[in-house]
Length: 138
Image (cartoon, rainbow, N blue to C red; front, side, top):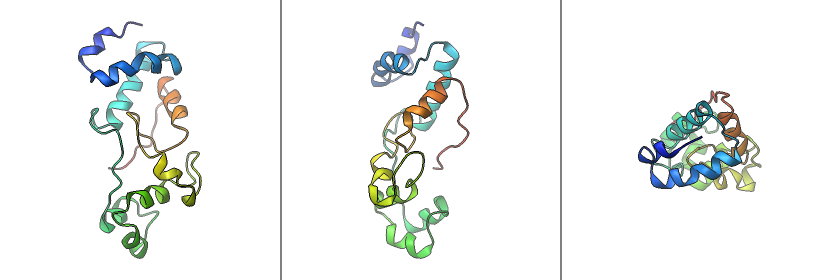
């Protein structure tokens, strides 16, 4: 598969990562590549954000992560990205518990922004054409 036409449409750093990514995840046709790049483009806010910003106020925590915070805990966690990440991504998608630090450690740190040790599995699903229905709320 010839990817050279993409060179003028992607940031250089992204384009440089394509050959090893295509090989590692067996992205062997145009449709799979389109799915993969579309997901990465969306998750990275059009290639502008590589790391998820977890610096939420108490009010934003209650709005965005109501499942994990009440008013008291939101006030305690507000503006502490590491604690927030550890809480909201604990015991999910291969991450350890809150004390493990996995939630913040494996927060969205790549073009395909999924906060999990299982990021490779997500990429494989995307590359195979299987839709990823859940999206992180902004």
